[in-house]
Length: 187
Image (cartoon, rainbow, N blue to C red):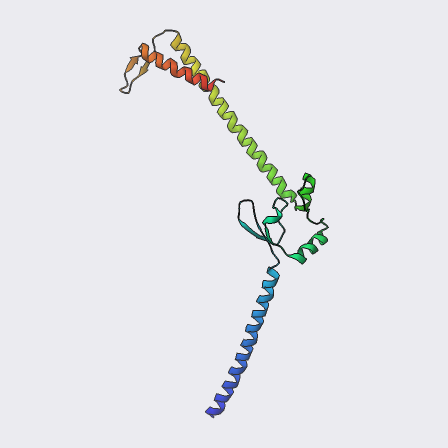
């Protein structure tokens, strides 16, 4: 009985092995077909020198010499389906012709315009803040120069917290410093 049982187990093991071989063959063939369909990709080098892989053609800003790989049949059928003209051989002269080849996303363009407007507003606010600070510095330097030019005694507080009066050389140095501030800030 053990021999019969061994033969039965051997037959089932052979059937299992054959089924596994067929499964492995099926998986291998399927992966080959998937690889073939994935090979219909575009490859090009962008303006910063990086390789780009895509299922869509590059924009018109990429020169023909930088396109490394392109699907021959699929690209023509996509252009025919979309109704786009074939790619131009020479340089594109009109900006309208440059946009025909690109897929323009209106939502993306709106977001880009909003981001540019926000950046411009931020830049304007920063410029206004700097202009206001320069104006304040100019006014303070002019007031200090007027006080120095009046001839009145001017004092300042030392590191020890004591009041000390400016002598003629300190007064001249302070007047020169104020004049340089006026020259740079009051334009």
